Structures are given as structure tokens and as C-alpha cells.
Length: 148
Image 1 (tube, rainbow, N blue to C red):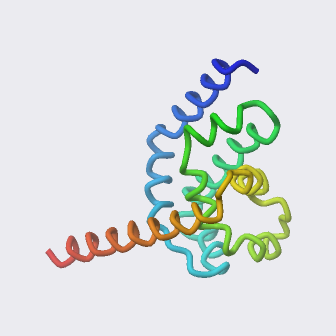
Image 2 (image 1 turned 45 degrees about the vertical axis):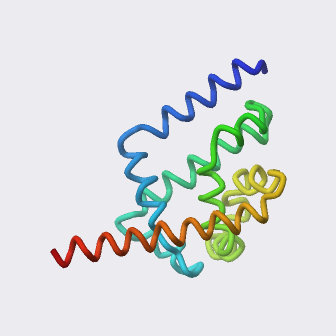
């Protein structure tokens, strides 16, 4: 595939991320704060199940394009960072979620793509720290809004 074809596919993936419901799902996912594998399973029967499934399946699908050679990995990783955030949230619970759901390949494409990024362990640590700050800011803002 040519670089311009790779770029066009990445732009198409970006356009899909801008769809209104997907944008709502992504906003929810950023502040969703799972603390255990149970939280990752409980969300499946919550009012946020659709958002959760939309975000994780989108990034697993997008990463499948990378893993199968439909898009250049370097270009994909240079143009995106959200897949790292999704993996950073899910990775601590991934094996247990796979076991509990009976789905040993759950987020396998996402995992493979993210783990292939040079220096990913340090980046995951930094991403988790940023996620924690975002969640704290959201909680503070939400508390202020409710007290007003």
C-alpha cells in the first residue's frame, strides 16, 4: 500500500471517530475509571455498555488494520494516541476479562499494536498518570457543578 493510501485510511478512521455517538463514547471512556476486572465486566450490563463496546471494538478493529498490513504501523502510531490510552486502561485487567468472558483474543489486535511501539512501557506509565489527572479534574468539576 502506498503512503498516500495509508494516509487516506488513517483519515477515514479519524472521520469515524468524529461521529457524534462515537465522540460521546470516547468522552465517557476517558473518564471511566475501572479499578478491577469486575469494573470492566460490570460495565457490560450498565447503561454505558454501548459506549464501552464502541470504543474498545473500534480501536481493536483499527489496530487489526495495522497488524494485517492494511496501514503502516509507524504512520498509524504517529497519527494516533488514543489507542494507547485505551490499552493503558484495559491492560491491568485484560487477562482476567479474557478469562471471565471466555474470549482469549479480546483486544488482541490492540495489544499487539501497542506492545510493538518502541518505549511503550514508559509511555504506558505516563499515560496512566495523565488519565489519573484527567479523572481527578473531571470529578472535581462534577462535584462543583453538583454543589452549585
